[in-house]
Each structure stands twice: as C-alpha cells, then as structure tokens.
Length: 419
Image (cartoon, rainbow, N blue to C red; front, side):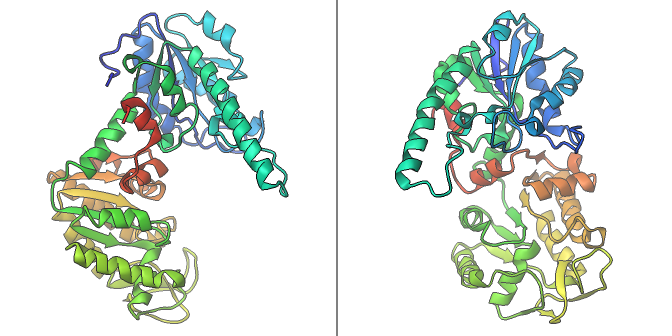
C-alpha cells in the first residue's frame, strides 16, 4: 500500500478528502477549528513537495444545492491563514476544470460542499412523501447512475488521491470510497491523520496489551449493543457507565427513581451480563450515584446506593465509591478504551465522575498503558478537563470509530487498502 511519506507530489495535483465539517455560529464564524488543524500536516506536506491541492469536504447535511448555511466559502479564509497559502474557491465542485487546470505547484483549491449534490451520498432527494416503491426504486437507480459521473469528474481533477477524513470513512460516499477506484494502487493513500487513526484503532483492537478495559458510557444500551457485544470477545473488563447504568440496575431489581431507563432493553442487559460471564469478562458497574431532584446544574443533590434511588430523584453521575472502583480497574489496565461519560458532565455539578475516570486513564497512560478516547462526549470530556495530552490518542472518528469497534470494515479504509 502506498504511503504519503514515500510519495513524490512534485508537479502533481492531489485530491485530498478532508473532514472540515466544523461548527459555525449564527454569523458563520468557526467556533472550533480542530478538524482543520488535524489535516494540516497532510496538506502542508503536499504543498511543500511542490504539489497542488484540490481539497474536498462536506459540511452538515444540506438538502439542496446550494445552501449558504453550509457553504465551505465561510471557512476558506481561515484555511488560507492556517496553510499560509491563499486558497482558491470553486463554487461548483463539478465545474472546476478551468480552476484545476490553472493550479500551479504550491497552490490550493477548495471545492464547494460535496454534499450539495445528492450524488455524493448516493441518495435521492426531493421525493414526495407519498412516492410509491417503484418511484423510490427508480429515483435510487437514477442517482446511483449519476453518481458514477459525479465521481469520475472529481477523480479527473487529480493525479493522486489522499483520504485524510477518518470521520467519514464509514460512509461509502463518492469522495470517501468510490473515487479511489479511479486511481491505481500507487496513486492512492491515507493522509497523516487517517493513518494515525487507523494505526491507533488497530493497536487497540488487534495488538492488545492486557488487561484490556473498555469504559462504555452514554444514555442508551440500544445505541451501544453492537459495540458491547463485539467487545465481550476482546476485553477483560467492561465498565458500564452513564445513563445506561440504570437499565442494568433496574433489570437486576434495583430502584432507580426517575433515572433514564430503557425498560424494553432490560432483558437485553441481563443477556449481555450472561455473555460477559461466559467470556470471562468482568462487568464493572456503579455501586453509588450522585442523584438530583431535577435535571439541572443547581438541583438538590445527595449520594445513595445506585439501586436505592428515591422515587422522586434521578441518577446524574457516579458517586465517590464508584469513582474509586473504576479508577482501580483502569489503573491496573494496559489497554484502555473510553467511549461515553459517567454522567451529565456538561453540568459542572455532575462532572466529577467523568473527570475522575479521565484522570485515572491519564495515570494509567503515564505508567505505560495505551489509551484511546473516542466518541463526541468523551472527547469533549478530555478537552474540558485539560487531559488531552495525557492520553495516548484522541480519535476524531465518532461514528467511524464506533463502527470499527463493532467489528465492521470501513469503506473508506477498504478503498485504499483493497481489502
């Protein structure tokens, strides 16, 4: 497989798929540019080699072409500042031939939001609510056919293809997977960010030092079923945290008050515990909780046993006994995955448990453990608590990371590797 370090970009045009889906305020100003900064090493390497850049990305989920709210024109100046190159802008990603042809070595062109076209995702748009199955099938076939033309046009702009968008690697879209088929094995590769992500996840899942501990948080068991089931064949310890705790507690006969709970998933929770036992996986759950009388930072709070929550109270975070238990397991681990906070960390009053978990991971990492933090809320946690530099790797992947953990092959990775 080709690598970006070995490739000579001099005199060549490179189509680089990045993930510049950054958050904007109402005035269309960037509020967090981490995703742009993460791709800079790849972009700067190509320019420094004497290559030229055609940068492709999506932003949001636009339903029409164009939609000013999701236009990448809003971010072109900031990209120019970070790259120290005046980045040009193509208002139509399918009609950029002249601008691409005029690109000189060391220059860059940003294409308009690829998702302005239905062909990028390969999904028909504008179907009537009462469309028949035949109409839906015809529309889907039509957009798939036009997707080939769309993809070929993007590929025609460049001599090589670089995928540096791990966050979209789980999507079999035109610019993330299909386009790679238009380039030979020698002319397609991962960017630096993508390669770091893939390497980190593979180290976690296949080159595992033990004990391996996964901390799974979040509000719903249903959203983590596939992940948990796949982890049960890989981890030594599974820490159940966050709102999903209360589904397990109730399934075991505990009192959870008004805490979040998926009543229809209680049997599933018990089944997962049985599977864990059969696989010699230790399930670690909260023994106490910080409870509140309302979903608010200034709620009245107290600590109780996690299975003895009063009827008019709700669990909002783990308690000090649980913090100590979780920390002990984490500190004795050699591989750690953290996906999901222990409580409503957005409220300062209920962030202590997540902070304690993060600090335990940092301590374990200092002692030689490999730690990977992934998923929006977990990443937000380590950023909020200033712990980012203390863990081995913070994934930008979100959904892509979760699908890898579930055991799926990501189209964006397969398209480069060929398997």
